Image (cartoon, rainbow, N blue to C red):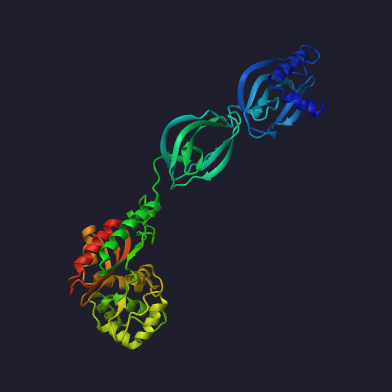
Length: 470
């Protein structure tokens, strides 16, 4: 038999199976051939099998089984058995063979029963409509022998399905489920759900999803920023205030860091300011620049923590005394310090011999960010800890500390204030009881302010900022 004839016989469908069986029965009827051919051919109700090991599809002849094709010649498929026979071996034993056809391409033949196991594979049921509901990807995907972790397209007919990956499952997306179906692989049944998310549609293994709606981090960040910006615009619209806000990452291991929506508060994602670049009198908030400059000198081995320097820094931060920073300006020169401040990206002309020192709210936030994160001049951990401890102890606490404590009792503030004539300002690093952190600078002037009369206003602004964001 040539290859063309064999292929035609193997693809002939049910009629060919029965014809083959009848031919086999005629062979069996001859006493001369029963020792070499099967003793009995038994028709079977169509039964699904899948291959469990490599083997051969064989032709049955008067002399026994003759290998014709590798069993694994086709794509993984369900094989349907319609007959069985036992073929004697030279040792007097028998091997059972099943007559099978491929659901994938119709290839037919005999194979040893040991090559197969009962069950369907690469087949599906018809889709069934389900009540439309929202699902999200699970936090941790399970290992599975079936297509998983992605949205798939099913290709082919239900009796011979194959998968094409379309898109990976995203944990920040909501998937709308409208159908379900059963997929069989290696005899086991798996449930798949039909999902839609934006332009993505396809099938997902049920174990990869859970009921729910995704929390859209970018959407919530935008909503917070919009609300905060609107509020800051309202409190600065008369031109007598400037406010800058910058969120820091939560304290490592804190409740905020472990919260399900912690990603909303990724560092810098909520930064907002109103009139943040407006130049105004800094009052004593300029002392943050002096502290930064001294740490720069220490990096260059031009400053050390003598008893006098430690005491001077303490007076400058805790009680906002002027003697120590004035001595630094005189010793190193305002021009040199201005050049260095400019090189750090801070407001470039804070110091002058003919006017009060100046700053912007954005610049104060930047120097505090460097202090908190150990950047620029603040690379020494012990130096940072010392300066931050002084800021926590500073005695003028009617502004940011008062306001944020009203918003959340137990909130800790490390800040530096400034007050001069009608200028009141406060800039600090704020830590909430749950571990959330941020930097806030509030500068106010005008409105007939004097002494500390502007600090209740700063406290109100600080309280509302914290309530809006956290």
